[in-house]
Length: 184
Image (cartoon, rainbow, N blue to C red; front, side, top):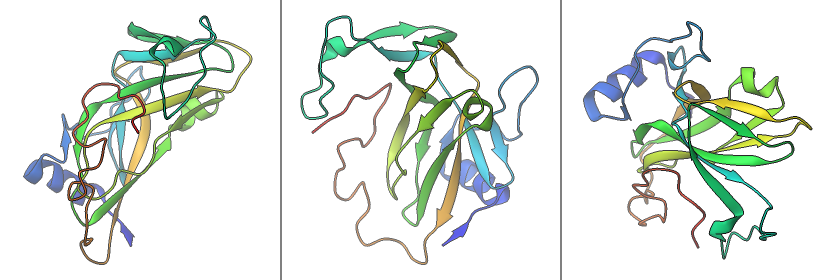
């Protein structure tokens, strides 16, 4: 596997719509940076958030997810309570080629504030908005800024196309739009 360059990412975005909307240059003026970087793409977080709360004493169960475990907010700045987390999504819609695996890492600006961004790998053939999980590991409230950089995606090319892609096996998160909750 080799990591793919800015040139490859730009060409794939233009030819196949791999990332839409696509920001060709890194933007950073007064915001947390986003857009194309040397060997990756810094995606933005949209303004839709699901903030977890214990108001109703719900149990977080990935097999039986309770809608009352979170509150929905559409906002430019999301406040995550201390030692809590929120779900969000990327502004960008991704279409992953059959011979590419995408790994996500959080932005250092958030990491240095005790905010961890978690995303599972984007598998070959998957497409959709990426659901992001922001964990506030601090004892203080934390801010997440909508329409600014949230995480960096690294594109790894396999030695050959996979036999069975995420699309081939009709993965449960295929084509997701918006913030997507756990599915069984």
